[in-house]
Length: 256
Image 1 (cartoon, rainbow, N blue to C red):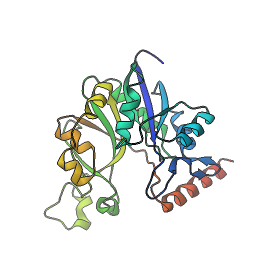
Image 2 (tube, rainbow, N blue to C red):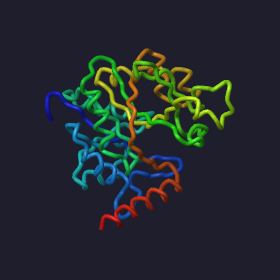
Image 3 (cartoon, rainbow, N blue to C red):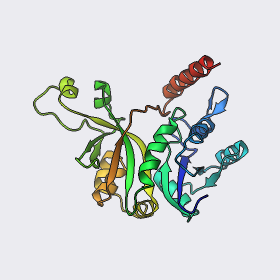
């Protein structure tokens, strides 16, 4: 790796309430984590990537596939903490892109967008991807996190509620009143910020909304929002798995 290094890290834990062993689930003859690695490998703006896991089954599987993998603590509370633990083993890494381990349809361009921005930053900087909300159901879906952004492109607040609130219009007409953004869940950090945020105490807002980035904002860490036209789909439920499998199967059949 270069002395000045941007590293992609794919957190992949075994335990999942709805889909135990999710990284090892099969999609068209390949594991979920294999498909994610194959997409990340196509990214051009990172110098290196690895999987960060808490389970020897995932570790052995990824190792057999030929990708770098690091064992991390079982009790890490989030992918961010898992990334920070890995960063401690690679002192040459200056910037990290946290890649969702349950999105086999992730576009490498999403990784490159974050990497190109964060690689130019120093100090305590964090970046994330957002996209415009165009569907009313997305606006009211509590599983889709919304974000309001200031004039410099930094996040002001994240919430599971529809934000901003439109006082003088019915909810069904809100999308015609202004711009609404959803959070895409990928982060990039300078090494300084990643080491710092793992030491923070959980803010009450994070506890209420179950959104770790609210602690970072409350502690004064700027989170820059990069608008993206890319789309991906994560796998959290059996229905997600079925739909993504169908999408991948159709795509691979079409490409021969």
